[in-house]
Length: 126
Image (tube, rainbow, N blue to C red; front, side):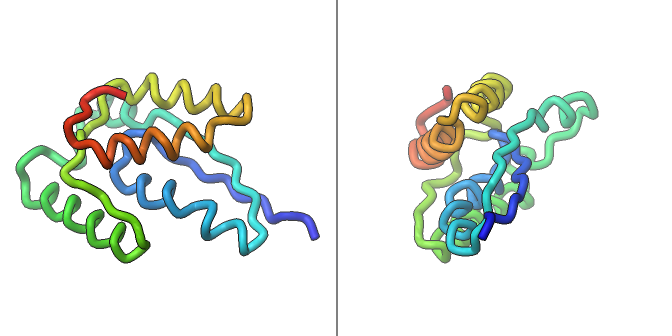
């Protein structure tokens, strides 16, 4: 039976994408789904509109960090939070991810980078 194709559009700077990235293969492989990883630079769109979805120090941002922590624990992995946000050089990270997708190492790069930026809250660089 042929795998069912599914495109996964994400941006390297997304806080909630971390949860999906870390679980994607675990969930899709048993279901026979072939994932097409599609990184894009959503931060550019946000900057063009002068919009910050999670401003530092707000109740909304504090809730977001707690929500991610709760969900990560429920999914069986940890997240030391708050993590660097927004990720510096997320445009570069998205570009490298795009190259990696073309060359076959992109999904591993994305998982490794997201894991490292979430696990090391001192990290301010990709």
